[in-house]
Structure formats: structure tokens, C-alpha cells
Length: 377
Image 1 (spheres, rainbow, N blue to C red):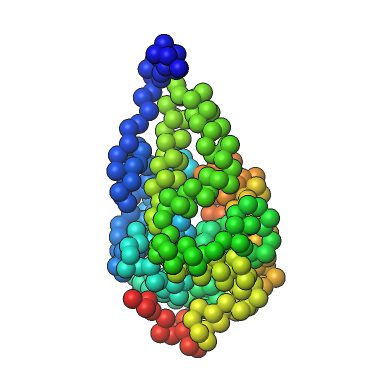
Image 2: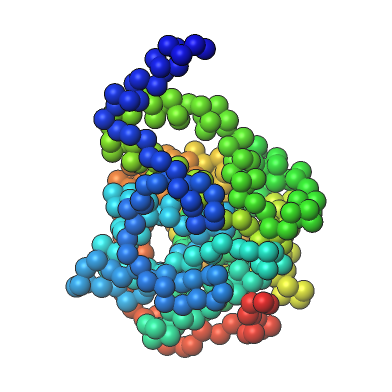
């Protein structure tokens, strides 16, 4: 390619009214897109090492609901997908309805965290739940888990059903025998032991590369062609850059959590068989889940097929079980225009209708053998 040909490729960008954002350092040291996310304000109200509990206060002063909600996102990528920008923010929809929102920020695991297991993750959730219960003088809290965080939340709700008012599972992995996509094939045949024994914590770059390989033509070519076509639309450029920032600003995953999730859940599907042990002798039985259950699924979700989440309907004791779906993928269910127009207003109403009282008078009691659930660290 000669100089003239190169100039012809660059010229449209130089004439564009939008200059592509530059790169800066991300929170974990890698390159990041220099564009701000349009997030709602929050305060760190509780912390245990790198793991922080964030509190988002309602945006209204009257009509506040009494039962707060704790959101648990996956350890892969960051929770910002629920709050990228105001017009596509799940968190803002909750706050505008008067719901106090708490959220677990898993932080950036270091080498010292590689031996954490799912037991520790559930311990962090328990610490957050107890903090919220004390702060609000209530016995029960609504719990929402998204993706891997949904798996953790189902485990927690089975362990401590008397602490949970409502359980909301969003694109959550429950039955791992159902999916037939590439990620399901990888999950079942991946040598997680070799990866963890070699690398310790699983690098975010490795995980991101794997996700890109699920649909390389679209994720590594088509979407950038579309971005170029919309280069003069500043709002579309900002939307695109915020999404890119979220995708590539990812933390590493603690090695033993990854090993356990792949081996015991993806490969052996122990959770739906009631064979998953949080620790030796502490077996999780999903039948102990008896609170109102809402399942949120994306009809086009190839990462966590709807059937994987909906399988929990026949495994719990909840009398009230409801499903909301939207024509979207795993990420679109949180940020898609259609999702925010049709799905999330219904979700907010469902939660609000079940968040007007303080719950039962009797104090929450843990399952026998779980009363001393704390982080091993």
C-alpha cells in the first residue's frame, strides 16, 4: 500500500466531527478507552479486603420502598454493564422507583486471592446481606444475581432462605447440561486444572480472547465496520466506546473459583443434581429456595441459554415463580433499548410490589452447619 492509498483510508476520520478517544491506563494496568461511563453515584459502605459493598441511594424522596436489593454480578467483567449510561441503566431504573440498591464490587484479585473458592464468594455475599439487614433493621433482603452472580445467588438463597425476601436470577447458569453453543463445548472439555496450575488466577485477557472467539467475525470485524459507518453520530460513538471500555476493562478471576466453576458446575452439573458441596459436608439443596422467584432471560442468549436459567423452576419450593423474557442476548438484556423499554419497567414493578413491608417477624436462621460461613482468608 503506497502513501496515497494510506492517506485515502485515514482522510475520512480526519474529516469526521468525532475524534476517536485515546487510550489510557485502566484500573488493572492495561489500555483503556478514555471515555467516562455515565454511572449513578454510589458510596462504599462496607469492605472486606478488595471486595467492596456499594450503596446507591434512591433518586426520589417520597414513596421509598422498605426492602433494599443486593445485586451480585459475575467475577468476569465488571458490574458497570448494569449502569453504563443513564438511559440504559438498570440501577437507575431501581433508584427512580425508590429502591435502595446495594452491589458487590469484586475488585481486582491479586496473587494472594488465587485460592479463593465459591465458598468464599458466598461468604462475601453473606457479609453484605448481614450488613444491609443491620443498616435497615430488617430480616430479609431482595437478592439479584446476574450470570455467574446468579449461580452464586441461587446457592446463597438455598443456604440462607430466611434472609432473602425475593430472588431475582438474571441470565443465571443453573443447569449446565442444556447449552449447545461454543462456550458450552469449551466449558465441558476445557482443562481448567492445567490453566489454574500454570497461571494461578485466570488472566482477563485470556477470558476476553475466548469470548471474542465465540463470534470472531462479528466481534472482531463487523462491529468495527458499523462503528466506522456511524462515526459522525456522537451519541452512537459514545455508546460504542462505553461498551468497549466495559468489555476490555476486566479483572482476573481467582484460580480456584474458576477451577471449581468449570469442573463441578459446567462439567459435572452438580448444582441441579443437589450434589454441589460448598465445602465438605455442606451440600446445597435448591429445594430450600422458597421465596418469590423471578427469572429474567434473553431469548437470544448464547452464553447462558434461557433453558439453563429456567431449569430452576422445577428444583425449588417457591410457590410464586415468574419469568420475564426479552429478545436480546446475554448483554442486551441489560443495556438493550428494547429491554429498557419493555423488560425493566416490568421487573421494577415486580420487585416494588414485593418490597413494601419488612418481612416476617422471626429472625433469619441459617442452615445447620452454615452458621459460621466466613471467608477462609
